Length: 279
Length: 247
Image (tube, rainbow over all chains, first blue to last red; front, side, top):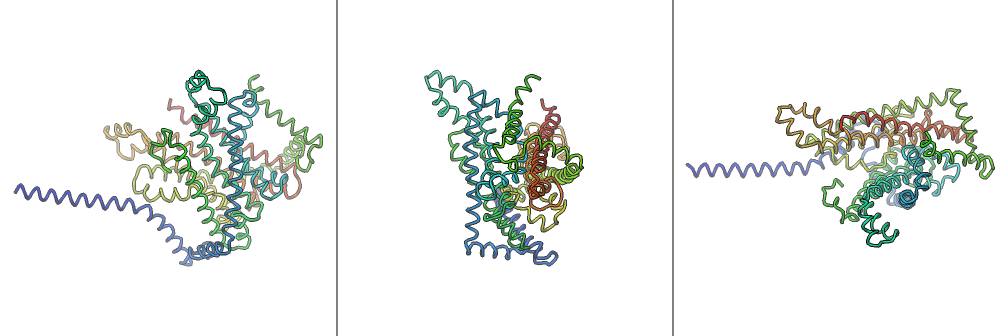
């Protein structure tokens, strides 16, 4: 009798384990389900005829359009244009932002002059200055990149300032005590200690750079993913518009993910690397 | 008083520099009209009532879209933190769409809803929802386990607990997410109005720019900039009020 109970118990355990396994698989599969459901819903609505193909072209049409663009080489040209503008602007903004942040942390005069400008400029919708930039610099790369720089600099400055303000005084004192020069303190103590915050500022600035690059392409026209999308829109080519959304979404996803990976790599030495990340 | 004067002196310096650069003819007045003419144009625009009606149209779109985004986004975020199936189904979609430059949705919202308010509201709703969702999710997820346990041991129902423990502890991060959404709202509002609209502040900027009426264009640009700044400051003030119970 006792053995029977044991056997039953073992069976229960086995089925419980199997049940848990099934649940585990379900949890793993669920995320793909929702993406698949979204795409399926899109296709079903597009094919059902409840909306015109102009309002919602089918998934196949949009993929075909992306394929045509890719084969013709337009996709690569446009993507590189947009990425070039976004990254050129982002890089300039990063250099200006970090330099300005350090200057403000070191010099009271610089702090006095730039602090009110930044605290007013940061929350301002700088995209409103787009027509002004167009007026000054025309509608080519220079003005698009300038617009990106204008928008992306603020989060970097703020991140740098927060980072430097958070550096422990004891670290700086002990470095000075051990005879480090100002420059050494800055490069070997302050910069690494402030780096996580600077990186956070950069991570805010990068998606912003992409948004602004796309918007300025939309307003000013020309090559680039945003410009191509507006051209498609003007010709009432909704497959082109949807293809543009997919392309821009993919570019945004890849760029933001790469940035998160970069952060992890660069901050391997930092305690935050040990924490669970969402990226 | 004296302190504030010293603190904001750099702004006055910039304003004076602007006026001088334009007045002395260092740059053409078509490229940079003197600040004083911009102020005159601003007063004219205010008198004519155009500035008021355009601001009202823009703010209506922005506020409606943002309110929808906050309502839906907060519910989704808390649901994702509180209920595992919601998390499993929604988090891949959130992760997929969060990094997307939302300005890409401008043409499609116009295809769907036309040139008017509807397309801007939809754009702002879609664009601002995910920062709110992520804020609410992070806040609710990190709600103090001990608080949840003690509430449970005191016999609080699941719903009570959600309302009395999880929502308040999600508040700081949620409010932070809304602040991000607020900034995004202004970007999306102005760019969509610049690109396709027949009304609103962004439209006025484009209209006066195309017209070569640069004094007035600068006046509207500065108005938009000021509104964005003021909204952020007001929100920060409000947040501090709401979170005053915390310490």
